[in-house]
Image 1 (spheres, helix red, strand yellow):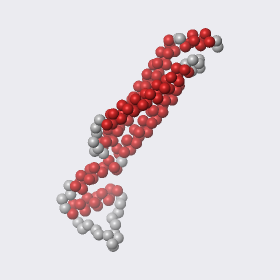
Image 2 (cartoon, rainbow, N blue to C red; image 1 turned 135 degrees about the vertical axis):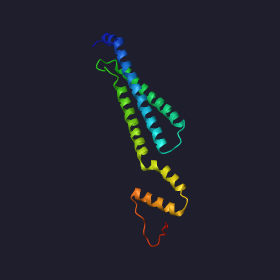
Image 3 (spheres, one colour; image 1 turned 60 degrees about the vertical axis):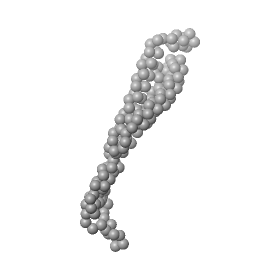
Image 4 (cartoon, rainbow, N blue to C red; image 1 turned 30 degrees about the vertical axis):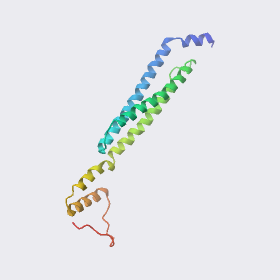
Length: 164
């Protein structure tokens, strides 16, 4: 292929329009992945009765900025690759976006596991313990918690047992 032909193909606006559309879609997918992670993070915090503040949103904006810088560098690779006729799509940007989606997908799974874990029930259990008015009510709650966790009561002769 002659150099004139290469420059003629590079100057074809439809090639760059197609690449620009694909890149914009990829960047949109990256933003959606980050927002889904933010959403599940907020749900996890609410389930665990943790304070939800603007810190998570600030971290999300920082994360989008970091991902965008990486994807911009990969876009430069795609622009250089568009010199070659076989480089029809922004392959580097596609791989970068897939990596971001995998990272954020893993974070979403971790958030959902934490939301549904037994640790999410701890604030409720602590509240119930605090509301106990006497030893009898506390012993009853302790038995209930042990039955939920599958822990059996200790019967060592050296241990003291709470009498209901």
